[in-house]
Structure formats: C-alpha cells, structure tokens
Image (cartoon, rainbow, N blue to C red; front, side):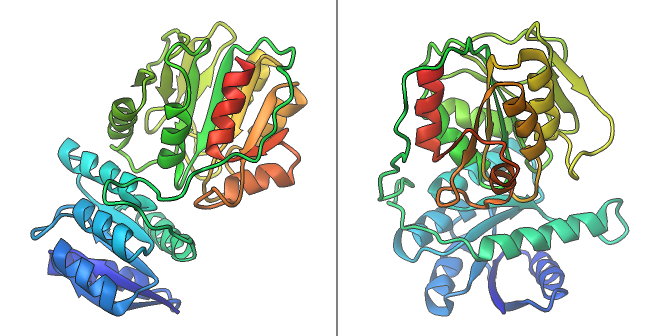
Amino acid sequence: MIQVLIADDSPFAAQYLGALLVSDPEFRVVGVAKSGTEAVSMAQSLRPDIICMDVNMPGGDGYSATRTIMANNPLPVVIVSSDTDQGQVALSFKALEAGALTFVAKPPGPTSPGYARAVRDFIATFKAMAGVKVIRRSSAGSPNNTVTSAANFASKTNRNVRIVAIAASTGGPQMLQTIFQNLPRLLSVPVVVVQHITPGFERGLADWLGKTCSLPISIAIDGETLYAGQVYIAPDGFHLEVSRGLRVLLASGPLEHGVKPAGSRLLRSVAKGFGADAIGVVLTGMGRDGADGLKLMRDAGALTIAQTADSSVVHGMPGEAIRLGAACHVLDPLGIARMIVSET
C-alpha cells in the first residue's frame, strides 16, 4: 500500500487528486495539508511514502515546503500544478532544485479529451516515484553528498563530433542541470534535447537551466541553424529532427512511444545525418523512448551513453537502452559531462 500525503489549499482539488489516486487499490491517502507549513508538519508526523504537493499555497508555498522537508525529513515529493503562469512554473523548477523528484499536471475533468490517458500517466508517475530513494538536501537545495563518476576515460576517440543529442523524461531536468553546469561555455558543438515535460513548462525549463548554467539555452525553432555552444530544447507538441546541415526540422505527426516530442525521433535523425560524428545520450525516465534511437546511433558508429541506475530517478529509458545494447558507456551525469568534454 502506497501512503500519500496531499498538500493543496483547495479542498476540491485535494479531494479530486485523492479520488484519482485511490481509484487504484495500491494507494491510500493518509492526510491532507492545506498549507506549506502544514505539509511540513504532517510529513514529519505521518511519514507518508510520497507527497502530492501543490506549488501555490498560503502559509509557505510548495517550493518552501519541499526545501524544508528535504533538509530535515527527506521524502519523495511530486509537484502537481495546473497553472502555466511563468511565476508558478519558476517555483516548480525551484522545487525540483530543492529535491522534488518531478512535476506533473493536474489531470483535466472526466469530460475533457485525453482524460483517461492523463489519469493513467498521473497514477503511473506516483507509483514510480513512491519507490525512489531520496537524499537529504541542505536548505539551499544542494545534495549533501558528492556525485562521482565511475568512468575512467581512455584517450579521445577519432570521431569528429558535430552534435550532442539527449533524450530525457522523469527526473531529466535535474540531470540536465548537472551535465550543463559541467560543460564549458565555449563548447565546440551544439546540444539538442528532447525532455518529456508538462505542456507549457518547456519555456520555464529553458529559463531555469539558463540561469544555473553558462551555456545559452533556447527552445528550438523550425528551420533555424544550430550553433556550437548552444543548447536547444524541443518545443511541446512537435517532434524534433536535425538535418546533416545542422538545421532544425519540427514535425507534427503521431505520438511515438506515447509522447511528442519523442527522443527516439531525434536520435534517429542524428544517426542518419551524422553517423559516427555524434554523441547520443539517454537519461532517466519512464518507458522506452530513446532506446531504439540510441541503438541506431551506436550502429552508425556514434558514441552512445545511458545513465546509470543508481543516479537515475527512474531507470526505464536508460535501462531499455542498455538492454538493447545501445550504450557504449553507462555513466552518471557528471561522467556524461566529462565524456562530452573529452570527445568535443
């Protein structure tokens, strides 16, 4: 039984979210907090398996509550929001930095298109996050432990790397932050990212990463040319491909692996356009997206990397890549950054 604490100042929202979760017999709601301060107190007294945290509450917002919980009483926290106001989006990313595992959108009402899928994904996220081992954070939001890499790199290979392509899902923003913070400002290649994220949050992701990393970060625009030392994030609702001439190609089309943008679509285009002259990375995330694309990149001679299980929030995507034999290396985020630096 997964015991959930819901923190939301709206009684209607709290009741709705609780009803969605307990529609699955594995969940039990053990308490409802109406403020951030109450959430901190109830987290201490109830010791739930996971906290469903609204970001916008009186008496301490979801970010402040998450920061306090992770500093004193670490528990899995999932931020839940229906508001794409940029101030609330920014708070959601600050909560990630403070130790929240991920954020999800509040599912729409039962009469809305996509309701069944949204509820299924919502429940699946909470199931996956309830089993994640969290660590104590300082009040500033940084882990108390030091991330180390298991990699002992050989000398630089003979690849003429022209692009780095990354696929990520649940837990990805935090991993991208670690990687980008350890890349030089004058990186000699562009970096292209597909990050599965709540619709309307991709701009907030770019802004948050841009404030914490030295690399310029933007949302990819159809037809634009990619430049060295710049990070490009796929926009919501479009698959992103890259031509051999380093131009962005955005496409609509059907979902792939249940998502759009799909990491596999990006990695396939890089395999086709760049062959051995590329680095492909599959980071933490639920599902299988990116694994088959990474395998095509490896088959084309590219340097391919999957994230380690220990450093992943969810090892679904990188685990599938490893199972397929798609990864030349299995590294933590700091090791991934070091590998990129050594090969470019």
